[in-house]
Length: 118
Picture 1 (cartoon, rainbow, N blue to C red):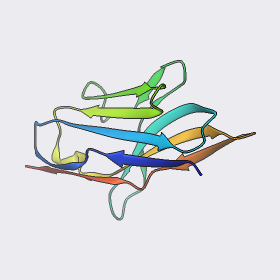
Picture 2 (picture 1 turned 135 degrees about the vertical axis):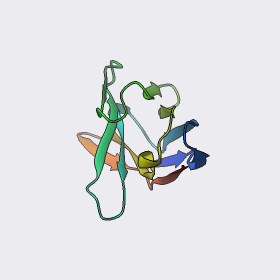
Picture 3 (picture 1 turned 90 degrees about the horizontal axis):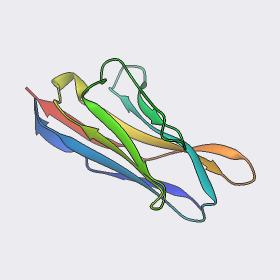
Picture 4 (picture 1 turned 180 degrees about the vertical axis):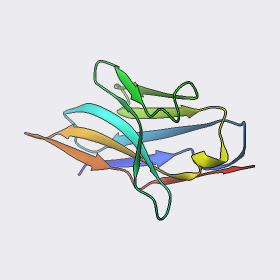
């Protein structure tokens, strides 16, 4: 059974940095696109960044220039480097990945809390 395990969340002051990691484990043949979303209680889940298997990236306007998504296919891992963090970046961050198992399906991680204090 394939699962995604996130790490790297925590508490940081405004202007600081954090790096999130999300590693896939289990019987994996291949992974297509990977990405990060975030959710604040009471608000809609927001797409933060995505990265394709060819390393093309896409970012929400609110994080462009501050966040960088990357992946290490040898480790089945996706990263999110977050710099110049703002209090409004506070949320639970979820990674997701398109896993191949005779067909592609989307798998989600359990989420990691990021809190930015002012």
